Each structure stands twice: as structure tokens, then as C-alpha cells.
Image (cartoon, rainbow, N blue to C red; front, side, top):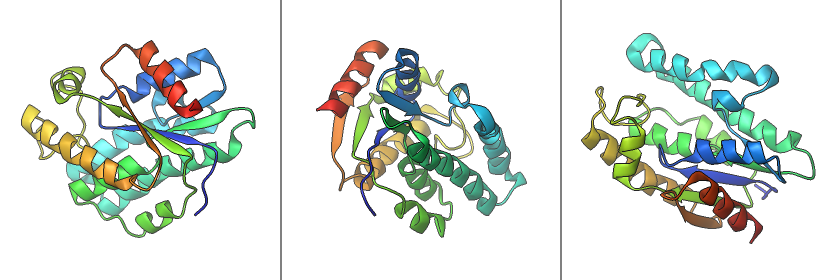
Length: 205
């Protein structure tokens, strides 16, 4: 499993990853941000925009856990493809790669085989930029729970306690998942432009 010339932007839910990636896309610099956020999908990959709605239906019991995992693998495959299609003069920055999905599956009791073996066979990034956010800030950004989906909290009903506990376990799992990689920690409490600048400095250094 060789290292490749790309980076991963990682963090718990509502840490500000999407905002940073959108800011990077607007700057059109040497970094190529890639995410399965609907606002950043282009071409044939726009079909992935339906993933959140499909996952919601699956967690409502309309589909099997295997189907949920297959959907999640589509997102991972898209991020993998972006590494190999990036222009040579732009460094890909991937939204979470497979790390966040893998940890969430474990926390929520979803089957991670054979997906885990496949994901771990994918190229390793040059490094990881980890956005750290305070629990209260993340809760506020979630609209006090109004924006939460089933992959962001414990139990059937979102609440601050179930969200905060899940996010704490998620952070611990993410840190463990990338413990063998170079990881740069950044506070996500500052404004977006400043956070983006910090991300770029971390990648450059």
C-alpha cells in the first residue's frame, strides 16, 4: 500500500470541512478539493448527490445493511478516482477518504467486510489535516440537531447527548485510524478563510 501525492481533510461532523473545501474550490489554486457534497459534484458523478437521501431511506429500514454499505462504497470509489484523474499540477485534497465511513460503520454496527479490506488496500495519503471543533460549536452548526442524519448520532432520535457522545467516539476512532500517517491538527473555531489558509500551510510544510 504505497503513499500517493494527495491529502485528506478529516474531522468530526460539522467541523467545517465542506466550507473549507468550497473556499479552496473558489480560490482555484494548486490544491484540488474533492468531496461527495452535492455542491461539488460534476459530470457523471452528480448521481452521487442522491446518496444522502438513499442512506436515509436505508436507515429507515427500507433497505438492508449490505445495501447501505454498497452505497457508501460508491462515495469511496469516487474519491479514489479523483486521485488518479487530478491534473499533475494540482494536489488532491479528499473529504475524509474512507476513514470517516469506516469508523462510523463500526460505531453504528454496520458490517465492514469485505469493504474494510478493500478500503485499506487503497493508496495512502501524503498526510492528513484534522479539523478540531468544540462539541457545543458542532451542535450549534447542526441547527441544534435539526440538520442531523442517522450517521451522525446514536439511537433513532437525534439529541445533544446522543450527538455529543457519538462525535466523541467518532473523533477517537478517526485519530486511531490515521495514527500511522502524518497528521496536522487545526482548530476549526476560526473563520473559514483563516482555516483554509492554515490548511494550505499545513500541506505545504
